[in-house]
Amino acid sequence: MRLDPLYGQGDDKPTLNSVIKRILTFPPFICLLAALALRSVSLPDSFMLLLKTLATTLVPVVMIAVGFQLTLRLSADVLKPMATGLLVKLVLAPCLAFMLCRLLGLNTMAAQVSVFEAGMPPMVSAGAMAIMAGLSPKLTAAMVGFGIFLSTQHHPATSFPNFVKGKAMSLT
Image 1 (cartoon, rainbow, N blue to C red):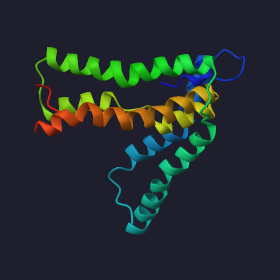
Image 2 (cartoon, rainbow, N blue to C red; image 1 turned 30 degrees about the horizontal axis):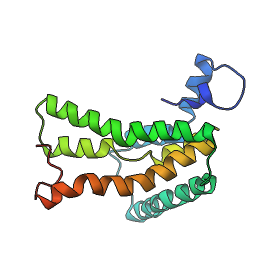
Image 3 (cartoon, one colour; image 1 turned 90 degrees about the vertical axis):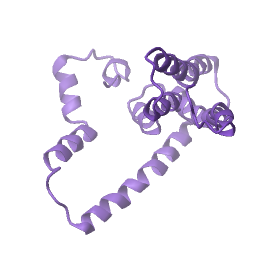
């Protein structure tokens, strides 16, 4: 679900038609429809190589774009929502996933990965789309930038004891 029609820049209230038009003209949605329609079509190797080359440039370009928006000195109106968002994303979400897995008696690799993934930082590509939509670029860049940094400290610290015990990410 895209929030920029509701919370983005501009004073116009979104209508059902304008939201549908934005969804149907959203480039990733068009690509999804094209991929679903063409999934049984075999593409030439040279075209696949071109697509793979273009795809490998996506993350670095988006990270640079988000990084240009990042500032280390944050105002209180950015710091509070960022801290709340990162607390939910990096701490509460994996705790909730862990408790849900325990409650349901799940101790499979998929459950362990789900708990680990629940604590991943905000997505770079989602941050870039939010910045493009004008959804508080400073807050968005801070959430992505600081979230990535904190997760590089947080994930190893929370999973290292299990690796030492020989129980890589065990829920038991």
